[in-house]
Length: 94
Image (tube, rainbow, N blue to C red):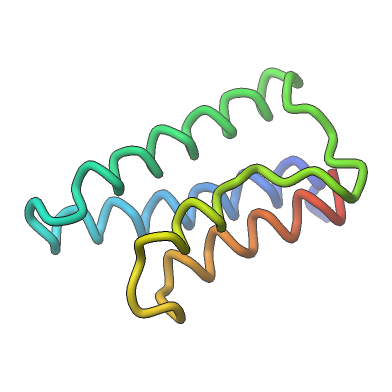
C-alpha cells in the first residue's frame, strides 16, 4: 500500500506530464502560464519530499485549481482535473 506522500507525488507527476504535453502542443499562447504551473508543481513536489509542505488541516488549498481555472479552456480540461485532484487529495489527506 502506498503512503499518502507517494500518492500525492504521483498526482503531481501526472499533472506535470499533462502540463508538459500541453506546452509541446501549444506554442506560445499559453506557454508562460503553463511554465508557471510547472514551476508551482515542482515547488510543491520539492516541499513535499523535504517534509516542508504545510498540512492543509482540511481548509488550506495550494491555489493550483484556482490559478489554472482563471485561464484554461475548456473547463473540463485534463490539466484542470489533474490539479483539482491534487487540491482534493491535499485537503483530505495531508
